[in-house]
Image (tube, rainbow, N blue to C red; front, top):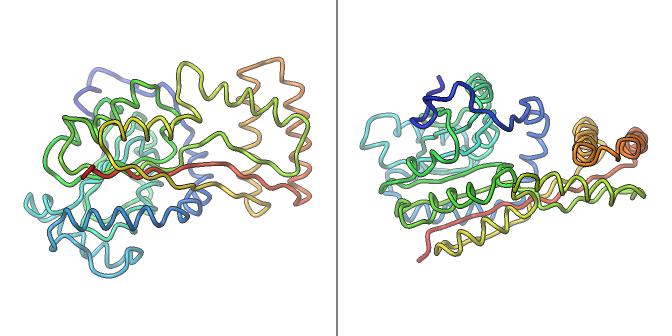
Length: 317
């Protein structure tokens, strides 16, 4: 079931920038593979969580042991006292639940989740997908990032997380996020793992004469209406540091080849469409670019590298 946040009660439709559910599903495998590169961030996060939580909340066994995680985390469902000993994981822009599906089995602590998204349809997809379910209790909340501060207030051990979200934020929304994690009104024990933020660094091999033109238009579109776009990870990192947080960044790039042909085809088509949306005069050039790239993909010649960053924020000492 999806519940509405208090701030969403008067809005029948909150979605202003919808993300297609099929795109989220199509990119899931590449996202999960890329995030393995940030394993050291998970290890550092777990060390801090183990310091903050009572021993009874720590899960036995390896972080990847999903069965052990499920059994141990069930304590978080047994009442207020047990819930207080669990990490409250708040997934902002949770979408179809991909972030929860990847991260929950790797958190070797008792946990309960709140999935926050402004699109009720995506939250319903998450509710119906068994692979997206994490251990312990999961609450799905229809709301926006402005609802986050009310969720991170208090003495509870909390982990704010997101995946492929920061580039879609405006500066004011990034300030809300940073304040909720590390601002003066935030809880005393708020950590954050903000994943898979695009950096704008895209390499498509072999090269093509129109690559630079497509990239320039695409990046400009990503910054439309004041969105952070490719500057998001560094911008949010600085906002958190300004608030006293300890911030670590780690590359989690996509490295795609012909084994991900369907994803590459979708990515190239969407990239060209976005460039044309920004500059309609590029329509003919973009179509030629896509055709050439699809021919290379069919021949098994194409490689695509898309830069991403994961960000870990810990309370300053």
